[in-house]
Amino acid sequence: MKKLLSVFTALCIVLSAGIVFSSAQSEVKTTCGGEGECDCVPTIVIPGIGQSQVYLVDDEGNFVYDEDGDKINCFPAYFNVKSIVKRVLAPALISLASQHDIGLSKALCKVVDDCFYMNTCDSEGNPSPYGKLEEYPYSLAQCSQEEKNIIYGHIPLQGYSEIAGEDHLYYFAYNSFGNNIQIVDRLYEYIEMVKAETGHDKVNIAPISLGGTVANGLLEYYSGRYEGKPCVYESLNKIVYIVPAVDGSSIVGDVMGLDLAFLNPDYLYNGFLEGLMDEKTARGIEILLRILPDDMLMSVLNKVCEHLAGSVIAYSTNMWALVPSENYPACAEKWLSSPEMAKIKEQTDLYYTAQVNRFDNLAAAQEAGAKAFNIVDYGVPLYNVGNSWNKENGDGVIDLDSTSMGAISANVGETLPEGYTAAGTNCSNPDHDHISPDRVVDASACALPDTTFFFGDQAHESTARNDIIMVLATELLAHDDIQDVYSDENFPQFNWGRDTRGLKNGLLPTAKSIDKSTLTEDQAARLNAAIDEAERVLGSTVAKQGEAAQAEANLRAILVELGYAEAKSQPEDAGALGKISLWLYDKFGTNGFSEYPVVSIKKILALFGLVIGG
Image (tube, rainbow, N blue to C red; front, top):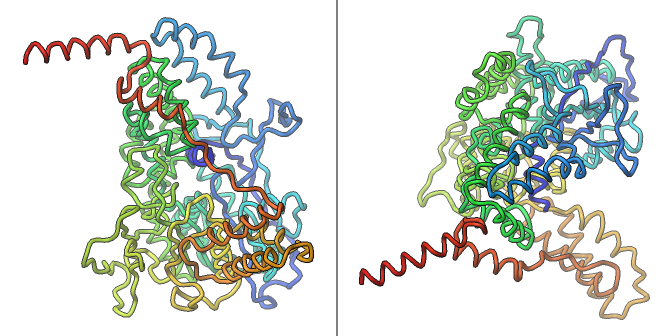
């Protein structure tokens, strides 16, 4: 289900708040004394989608609590099961009995409205008042421990805090899918606040994932070319991008274009669900879906998807920022051509300008003195929601072309053609080899060919769990030793992805705490060997493919044997459900149960006709 939740997270909408941070009369609160007294420049993290807390509030602005007494998080939406069942039950039963859509699609569209009302902006792109953003208008040094846990949980930059101090680290919270221009305006004010509060004239910004779209807006709207908006460029010391969606994601482009893979019934019953969840669950849902006739099911799905795109997503200007520039004109024509959407289109057109100008604006910021770096993932197919999923190399959520700012790459599982030579678009230095060792990526076409670091086989959602990426980000933000991909052999341009959080924070501390005097000589030896292997892997910033996963498996195995850990759960075999679903697809294609008699008769008649004809 993790994949399904990741996809849903990537597609869903949350609202945005418009609180502006004021830097007026701020006093310096850093222990360093500020500019001239300190070598560390304060850093502002611009987080990714869903990495800010937004809570549901009522008409009076009071928090709404669930049955367990917890505040209700608006991300990705609020699903009240009882309310959903109440709304859908009657039309579902009537539609099932009649085998026709008697109010079912209408009820499901109302469910979309019920679940996303706190995330739906108005016709001018202003966020709903039913979501309250939890902000951090101060450094991590002033955060509560609970706030620190939330922030470090999203982006573990404790290493940076140890070097620069928590009074030099800030987290710019924003409502992921609210109003892009309002968010960018708040970011500019936040930068001014951080400068005043720290006594520094410049800041670093670290745009992550969706944060890359916010950075696009910042470099465009605050380029000095817009009346009433000053230029931010000289306030930027470094821009360290981490898997940034600088040209959106094909997933969102496909959603807004209604070019969805699962709207093909053959793929819906044979591959779509298996790509998002465990096979047993997927096959069970495939069987359940057959209670509806084929045409009716696809009609209902089309109507609900169109309602979600047109009534929820289309009103969020920050969601529009995730539509790739090549898809924007057609999608805008589809959803924003009516007079009602004129104000929203005015704003999304402005962001489209920022998207088109992204490379020129970044170059202008560099000319003003900002240094720019990029850390990206590749080698993971996009989630199979839209029809672009198997056409692009990416990290599961965002295309590599978007995150890398223009890298040329082969598709996942393929390599660049035999005899391929580097394009040299942005680096023609013959001494620079920008083709990855696995011959998948040509980084010479990147906007930042000499300062972009690639991690193969790394999924987007586990980027923060790659300890090497976090160490690299820390080095780039805290020090000036790394000037490019050739500066330090410990951080090569092309590296391998890994997820070491469980090994580093769970298994290894447990293993090292065991009293070895209670073990046999053989057990102690094997435990020590597994510990040594884990420490060796974690101590290296040059990864080998699959090495960390193997070290974790080896350590887990001995801990399971000793009773200090549980075996890693394996996906359940689809078993009978899988066989039934595959048999149904083989015999009846995509037809629903009610259509089987007709299908069977047609097959018999066809066979009889063939016999007579023979």
